[in-house]
Image (cartoon, rainbow, N blue to C red; front, side, top):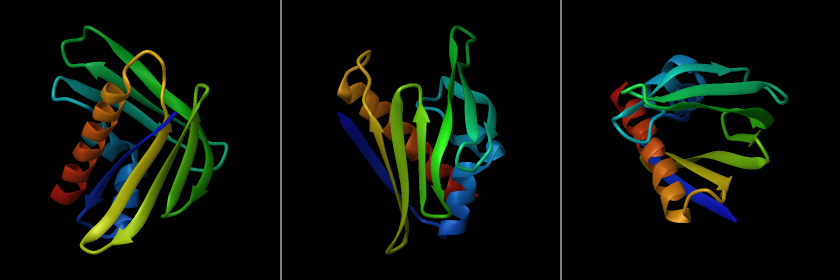
Length: 134
């Protein structure tokens, strides 16, 4: 099953793309809640290139690496990647007042669809706020 989340970001597409693909920016927005943060991020933005974000609870209680391989890049419109045995697609589409960022990803079995959608939507909402502030 696939899950889709989206947000409209009030900024030019070049700024949206840069914030989505730059490690320093990723560390600023990549968290689903205020008690988590991304402590490190790497991006090799090319087909076959890898990415990794170290996500940790701010209390140090747990953390994990969200990592994968880019399978298709069409700057500044599309990013597809594989993470584990799952796939994701990120589309950047011009819209009135900004850019629609739509993320579609394969669901996993450990968490409910609602939890997964909520977590990914929260991260995308943080992304939108980060871009609009900068």
